[in-house]
Structures are given as structure tokens and as C-alpha cells.
Amino acid sequence: MTLRWFRTFDPLLAIIPVVLTVVSVVFVYLLTQDTAGTATAWRAAAYGVAALILMLGVAAADYRGLRAWVPWLFAAGILATVAVYFVGSEVFGAKLWIDLGFFQFQPSEPLKFLLIVYLASLLSRAPRPLPWGTFWAALGAVLLATGVVFFQPDFGTSMILFVVGIGVLLHGVSGRLQRGVIAVGLLALAVVATLAIRGVAPLSGVLKPYQRDRLTSFVDAESDPQGSGWNVLQSKIAVGSGGLLGKGLGNGTQSQLNFLPVAHADFMYAGIAEAWGLMGSLLVIGLLTTLALRCVSIAKLAPDRFGQLVAIGAAVKITFELLVNAGMNLGVMPVTGIPLPFLSYGGTALLTNALIVGVVQSIAVRHQRAASS
Image 1 (spheres, rainbow, N blue to C red):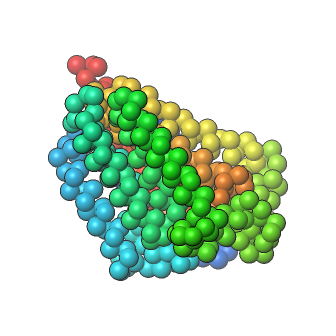
Image 2 (cartoon, rainbow, N blue to C red):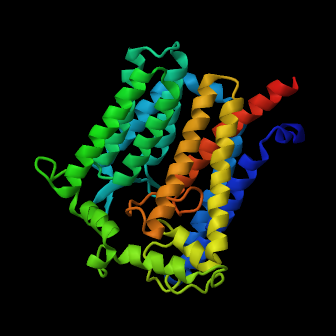
Image 3 (cartoon, rainbow, N blue to C red):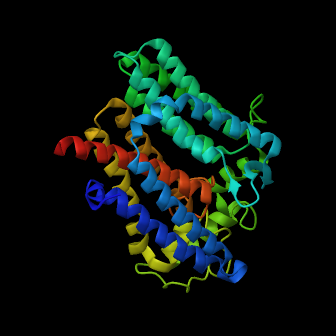
């Protein structure tokens, strides 16, 4: 890799993930040192280095080469996710990970990326207006990926898969009728979800008890302050106690004294807000928003439709994960376990985000080369 090659990089796509990952390692250390020493922080640092190498390697490759492998990769992603039902490790009533000994692999995380590139490949190969056969195939892929994860059960990740898939599909369809079909489907899904949450037969068994408790605590955390509402209440206290400029690194009470469970993962936003205050949390939101907007800009510059749809999918994923994670930390969204991109602790999630940004960087590099030639 030469200096000239690095000059074709989009600076925001290169710098923001690195900055966020460094912040993540610092906060993982601060939030886990009392319970795990430095072990968790060292793993987070190792994941960060691996993610950087992966991002650089993917950016160096031509993203268009993915198209030949996408159907097989997507099928492998579905099979790996299904395998979790049989060989997965169960935590909090859900089987999400495959224990590889040296690494806890969560197949549903890379499935987000695989769904994006599969839909992008499928839709970009089709003529315009989009044939109905292709439309139903794309919608079926979204529902398949969402379904296999939902029944693990992992409501949060399945929601991400569904939103990202619909986001790419809406950008790829043509004509009001196909968009109308999606709108009707979304309305029907909202009705089904409402009935499932309320426990109306025959949908009363769709949600696990702990999932229904989370939704109940979202509406009224005070109804069970020592149980399902604990996380939400402690997160809101942590965010509010940070004030404008925060209490400083290592000085938080809710996060440092373990009142806030898994602060280094699901509630990283609250940990940052407590230490750095409103200004720090706005900085995090600003960096992730800038990253998502840059993906949208790259989509407009993409030399082909495949690259355009991949970049749009990346933007939707980053934006929705930011909204849901920050929302649940602030008590305005239900707790779903959705990670904050590049910040929440988790090797598979970090590597997946690096992979996605690396592909978008590859799109930007090809545009720069084409523009300068």
C-alpha cells in the first residue's frame, strides 16, 4: 500500500471509526477494571486492531468482486445463524453466540452486512422498473434473515435486520405499487406486534416473558424498579448526573460502582454521558451521524448501483442502531441489546462494522480513482 493509495481514502470514513474505537477501549477499561481487571480492555484493544486491519484490507479490495460470492455468503450466514439453535451458548434465555474457544462468535451480526450486500446485488442486477419476481425474492430474503434471528430469540437484532432490509429495498424498488405493498406489510406487522405485546391469543407466545417485561418497563420503569425497570432507571440517572461536562473519567457513580449493568456494552452511551456529560454524548452522536451521512454521500458518488445500495444500507444500519441504543439509554426506547456502533463492547459487532465501513471506503476509493483518471 503506497502513500498515493492512502490519499484516495475518504478521510471521514477512515478517521471516525478509529476515534470511536479508541474511545471504546478507554471506556471499556474504566467500566470493567473493578470487576475484570484489564482483561476485557485488552480484548477490546485486540478487537480494535483486528477491526482496523480488516477495514484497511477490505478497502484495498474492489467491492465489486463481492457480487460473485454474495449468494453463497448470504446462504452461509443464514446457516450459521440457524446453527446457533443447536450449538449456541445460551445467555439470558437467548442463544446468540457460538463458542469458538478463543472467540464468542455471533452470526447474526455479520448477517446484517450479508443481507445488505445480498439485496444490493439482487436489486442492482435487475432491470428498471423492478420485476415483481425480484421484488418478492428481495422481500423474502429480508423476512428470512429477520425470522431466523427473531426466534433465537433476539428481538433487537431482528429489528435491525428488518429495518436495514426494508431501507435498502425501498431505495431499490420502483413504482408506487411496490412501495404500497411494503407500506401495507408494515402496517400489518405493527398490528401483529401490538397484539403480541398485549399477549392476545394466538400471538401471546410470540414474545418471551423477559421481552414483554422490557417493553413494560419501557412504558413504566417505576412499575418494577428493582427488576425489569432497573436498567432503564439507572441509565437515566447516569445520563442525568453527567450534567453538561460530566463527572470526569473514572468518577461516575452509576457506571463505575456497577449500579448500571453491562455499562461497557448495552449502556456504553450512559457511561460516556456520565463521564463526559451532555457535550461528550453529543460528540458521540455527532461522530456517528457524520459517519452515516458520509455513507449517504458516498452512495451518491458510487460508480454503480450495487455500490450505491450497499452505502445506503450502511447508512441505515448506523443511523438506526444509534437511534435505538441512545434511545434506550435515555429511556425513550425499549431495552433491546442493540450495540452502539464502534463503541459498545463486542468483537463480532465491531468487526462487522469495520467490514461495512471498509466496503463503503472501497466504493469511495474507486470513485476517486475514476475521477482522477
